[in-house]
Amino acid sequence: MNTYTIHTAETAPESARQSVAGLSAAFGFVPNAVGAMANSPALVNAFFAAFGQFRGLGTFSAGERQVLLLSNAVANDCPWAVAFHSTLALEDGIPQEEVDAIRRRELPEDPGLSALSALTRTLIDKRGRLDEADAKAFTAAGFEDDQILEVITGVAISAMANYTAHVTRPPLEAPFQAQAWDGNGSGSAKGSGSGNGNAVGAY
Image 1 (cartoon, one colour):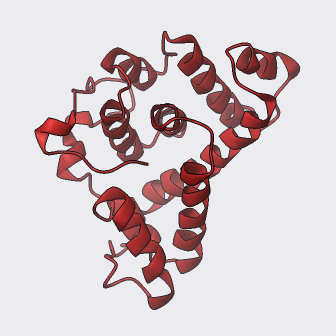
Image 2 (cartoon, rainbow, N blue to C red):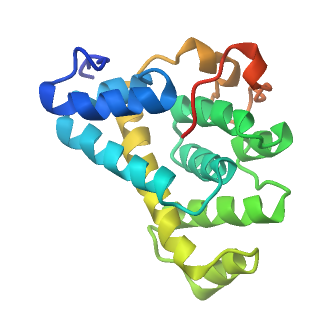
């Protein structure tokens, strides 16, 4: 397996620096997966653009975004991203038991979060080929048809981040170690409130 540099905004290729700096400003630091993406300006610039649209123009709350992205990370078997999004989900107010359920490959108890988690996992599992029952289960929980398309944005963001982590194998940063995941749902997510010094920004 090739070794990839984990870039900062200062060491990234010139054409990638604006995106890396923007992501650093959003998170408060450069996540290792982003630093690895920066080896390819095309990738990190595409990720930054999609990230900005998903976060800035999307209709999902911060907590819902984290449920979606955490569900994707589990579906894609990406330990780095599971730890990352477990941390942010807890910081964004998702109850620990809901985070733990997703990490165990189960659905949250909250009906809305359950529908969101189920839909994004189904999109991944079925390669986007939803049937009518899949869409109706989502809208029955209070979502709109056009939000299915917004979920696709989250799936695309996760594909870029998760696949990068698979290929480059970035080390897991200290703030995420408490949420380390072995692929089997073990390693219960521990609370990560804003008072513990581990806040890492909002996705």
